[in-house]
Image (cartoon, rainbow, N blue to C red):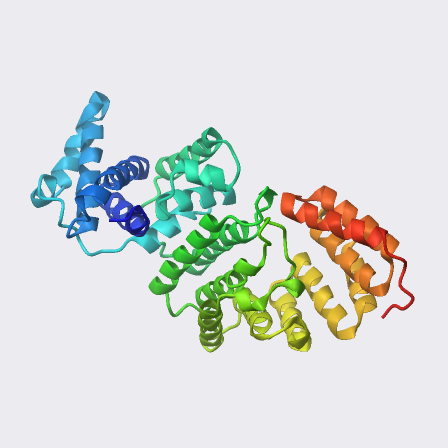
Amino acid sequence: MTDRRVEDLLRELAPQVLGALTRRHGHFDACEDATQEALLKAAQRWPEDGIPQNPRGWLQTVASRVLIDEFRSDSSRRRREDTVYAATPHSERLGPPDVAPENDDSLTLLFLCCHPSLSVPSQIALTLRAVGGLTTAQIAAAFLVPEATMARRISRAKATIENGGKRFEMPRTAAAERLGAVQYVLYLIFNEGYATSVGGDLTAPSLSDEAVRLTRLLHGLVPEDAETTGLLALMLLTDARRPARTRPDGALVPLAEQDRARWVSSLVEEGVALVCAALALGAVGPYQLQAAIAAVHDEAPTIDDTDWRQILGLYELLEQVAPNPVTTLNRAVAVAMVHGPTAGLDLVAVLESDGRMMRDHRLLATRAHLRELVGDHGGATADYRRAASLTASIPERRYLTSRAAALASRPPATSGS
């Protein structure tokens, strides 16, 4: 029995077990702790003893016993423990750990973790812990913060849920808004995994893999939702490029220089099929449009074969659907590829009045690239260096610094369009 097989199964079952306990007993905080203890016991026993016939039932029964023992251990909670114990069907109190109801509360749990009363960082942490089954140490390591800091963040989030009296049920009002919050949290988790914002590694595969897994779960629960389908397509089409994004030493490889033979063709094919299905479902949303842009990139055999006019049209539509300065910055690159780098620089100049964007290394890196294309090596070098000073990602910093050094040693170009 491989530990990896057990780990994958436990992460799949974690939200189902926690959802079932919380729906039955309430007390999200205590149920989450009991579920984590049951997962730990399974991780210790199953590799040697084998996976039970009904692993979910095993976990649910063990977690229920842990929960009841916790209530019993605190005399001030004796009355509440009696109430919980009395509400538990007799057959589930001490029965064999192989029986569990078939309800899957994973979607409800996702909605609960992404409640609007929580900050986005808390939503992310709680989602990874409660729905993703990651330990506090794993989440802290992924985001490069001390475990104690992440533990406090998760504890505060659970307390907010508990103290706010949030009922464990699917929200009956503003369902579309809450689904959007779930999608956004999964999108942020994936982005942090695909291109980490800080640290020595370009990617954090555990985060992007978990985002894909949870989005697959969400898509399976709401297959008719076009934006969820688009989000999954976007993740797959983007993640397909991951093997080609770094050199053996961990150095960043930009899209134009990537070996496309290393892209994962199965993910590209699945992503393209999903985005086509999403676009046929109804109103077009930002995740669908981003997925469509990713599909155009992924289907091009080489960078020179990329249909930049189609990409430009999609970015123009995306700006109408969901205006965002980062979208405008990306459109500037497409404009440069279609109408020339000078036109792209004109669009970048519009963003320079935004103080937030001028503190974002991506604007300066983009401007540096476009200045390089027009032959302004001095301006490009300065922008590359400034961009390098603003990013907390070590691989990105090294790449930008190397571009600046390479340009500084080259003579200026004589043409510029």
